[in-house]
Image 1 (tube, rainbow, N blue to C red):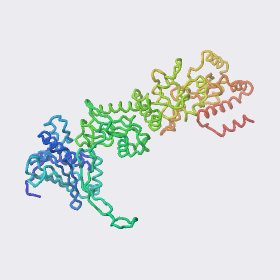
Image 2 (tube, rainbow, N blue to C red):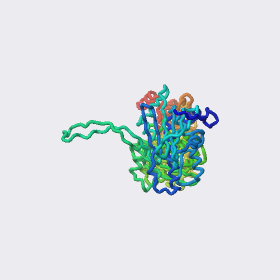
Image 3 (cartoon, one colour):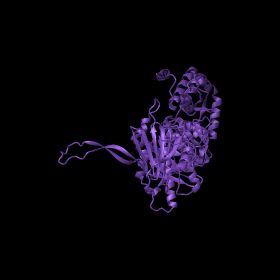
Length: 638
């Protein structure tokens, strides 16, 4: 290089620059995002100053950011025709770490609408040292004839000297490091990799980012060539624009077609089915942002696994900051895909992460309300589509409500729906309550493998005969959730397997009490025969045609016992339901039991085992000893 005097960086110490290079940024590829953002800021400044000076001949179309690569020399170059810098500005902006020329400029012009610079901290430029061992900046300031060259090889300092540059603007040349065992720096000399990084981080920079790219194309066939002649291919260099520049979410909704939304959704999230809903919104004031959200039709293959990454893509003024910003979505709506673009978020110094501030929370709260409103509208206006959505993501709403210990009841409860014993499709709580007879006190529910199996339960028969609707809980989380909610709109949730269901009339209760008192010895004998399998044998008037059923008393139900036993470690420390074997006091089987107690008391124990196993099978549970059960049935038959 030249003989220009080397100057020290004006920061706390050389360690400050070392920290910038090695510690602040997580991914080395970020360097390109930072340099492009700086180039965009420089163009913004020149454009703004041209407007202020009344230069009508300069439009946004006059500007571009150019990238180029020289593989052999290991040089990567980024150029812009922005405002440029003179010697003093090169020394102050690039020689003083953490001094942002963009931020200073923004402070000088105030809150002008025309200018929206990206740089805030003055450290992004130094990200280039993560991939380069030498950086040269040649810049010519707008309105000045003399250009200047800034050069540095890292922490040892920098030089500034005059140079020749024909046009206003800045050219930054990086000498890319040699490969190491840990890093393949050659990647940053490959056009495909550069295109990928521009598309990922800087696709919506408002100025064209162009690069000469080598491609292959077929040579024209000579005249008179046979129809089946195969053309030769040639390698050509084309100047391509790498970024799309115009974010879809910044357009008015009326300007965007359904096909454009779908194409964007498909390209961004690799889903080949159209989304159920598109939420395109913006807000100004306490929370300023633009959002484009999508409600998928189906869950991704890994959605219910720990590998799934929830969160919205976050942009700051069109620059991608974070691919999965978890703080913008509550867990209950983690299925929503999309992005948020805001100028007002407080980013940390590397722009890779957010600082948790009031603005972020406000945006998240707005989005939560927007998503809830969209789901509610889908539920009310297009039930078929909502049912398809609920099939895919209903479990997530339930798990999220349960995991919040009911704190999200107001947000989620009215979105829940369950199969019903009286309706074709699923029913929401509001729909169930609207159909309840005035005298009905409870919202009844039952657990089972399917709605069809639940409808066959003995406990359902009497309620169904009376026209009472029963919600069918068919997923593992359902009953835990109902136990947590306890009531909805002041209506208590009550299981039909609850031992104290209060279905009997006063006369029936009195009859059962008298019958129990008269034949307590029979019930005790059956309880003794079943031992610890059950907590009690009781007479009931809740059953119609069935002889027996199983109910529970206490906090753990049969369904909860089954689910808990399936959890890791559940088999070693099982939580047992307090089972009650209820005998239909009006069934011929009860009369048979009374007769056996008089004539053949030993057979009462055999009948007790048979009836208990029958009740298990009706509930959908396996019998403990299928062989013994089969032998007992055969013995009874002969």
